[in-house]
Length: 398
Image 1 (cartoon, rainbow, N blue to C red):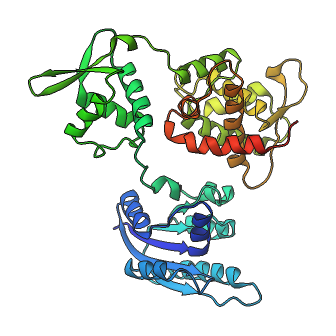
Image 2: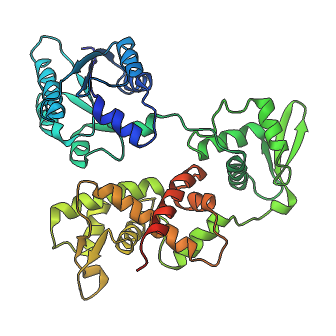
Image 3: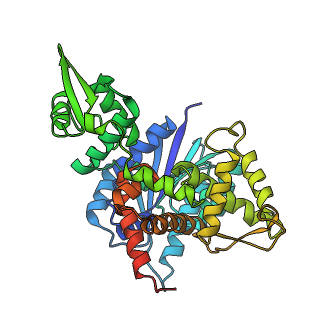
């Protein structure tokens, strides 16, 4: 059976949230992502708004993209609730209208749609949620078969020259040992990989990439062999210890190990879910055991027990969890120290600020881009860290 897809767009939730985050909402980007992710036909497209005065340019774009618009006239401030009801009723109607939709895409972060997701999944439907990081309900996100943040669909901005230079150093350091040389094309591919695609394949043609390398002759030496360009490490760059690596080494000595970013986010979410279900009777070592079970076969890999322990140490120092008195730390009960619907988002921010605070206290020069490399492996996170620094500096002392 064909994978027919139905999209239901909570326009108020997404558009208002996007504006708050200074993001442009691109309906074409959303549809392209859904098509690629599902591999199916987007047969039904409906959008809902409780604001009849929505951006008219956006309304035209939705109409051009094939969306049917449903609006509600606000009555005694019940416009939002009314439009949510329309969305729920229309979605449930599709289950009996004779058209079989295998996948439902709900573009919303509103927890009011949790019962709807339950109903769809009970009927064997695959539910994909799409929303914004700062407006998405954790309960809604956890119920969907898949959940995608709209921010992650957006194309990454090109790197600045300074960011690209730092990336070049990392690529060369990882590829070259001693007096070896490597093709320039290999360096370029490594830079793309390290940046998660932000250093785009089409940002530089072969010719312009060679010119880019030439602008950084202090870090590398270019050699021509026929039509092939090779890169060799410059003599003075033979064994550099970059600042972000020194940050990580110093934090590790302080028993504040930097947990790899993707693993850090996964373990934080899993830890919160485990502690929410366990109450007050889960010991530190038992929490490590529970998390380790979720990552079988990785005892010696990234999600080792030592790395899981490092994550809990970080969370405790960040005020995400607290411990009760035990004979030893391993037997101390672990409890959540946060509450509220955005517990996970706040836990990420607190852990990142803990790393930042420790880095700023080191007897090393502080550089926010190097801190981004230390904490997130990408200099592109520097702008996010600057926001955290502003929040930290604005907080009252003590």
